Length: 94
Image (cartoon, rainbow, N blue to C red; front, side):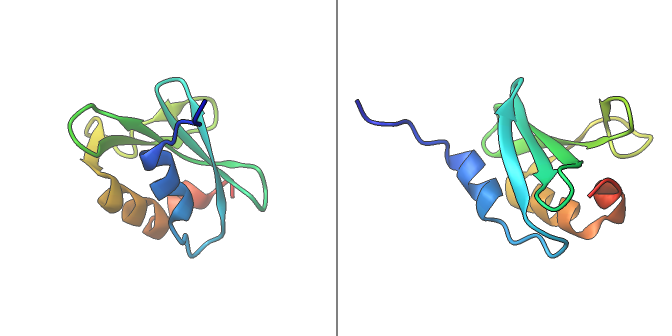
């Protein structure tokens, strides 16, 4: 039996984050990114079902939440990865 591949997970794992490598774990309808250096949570990406668009969330100490005060942040995967790479608050626990 052939192993199934997960293209979105592969794209996330291949991204070169300037603040360090991340481990990508598929869980609960999305992908959680953990710092390989500290094992701390970096971000959560939840596919929307609309192409490669994802909802971006960050760890607020006790739960995943939208990164801001204006509701969910939804964007194409490449843009989401760039957003996570450049915004410092994602890396507080990393």
